[in-house]
Amino acid sequence: MQEEYNPDIITLSDDEGNEFSFEVLDAVETDQGRYLALLPVYETPEDMVDDSGELVVLKVFEENGEEYYEEIEDDDEYDTVADIFVDRLQDAFEIEEE
Image 1 (tube, rainbow, N blue to C red):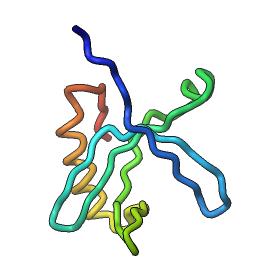
Image 2 (cartoon, one colour):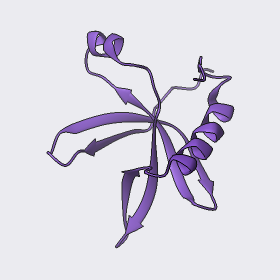
Image 3 (spheres, one colour):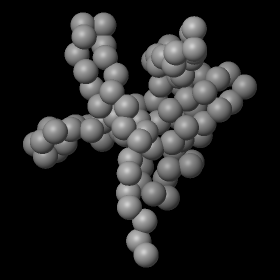
């Protein structure tokens, strides 16, 4: 029997209240924290075609029992985490390293 695919979708809002949906592809925990690799989810095929196809990598933190996500500001931290995700996801996706 074939397993049904149920992606883990999260919706995030920016500072201006715009909402964006993402599929969680992977999560990893390091000494520096917990991180998610996300892929944007679009409502129309045209929007998907226009997308760059780049993974969105965010750091997860908790405050008062709530999970929040933030961009990784430190270049070295981002490079380290991005390399981990590329290694883990390259077999499932066509990932081109820059």
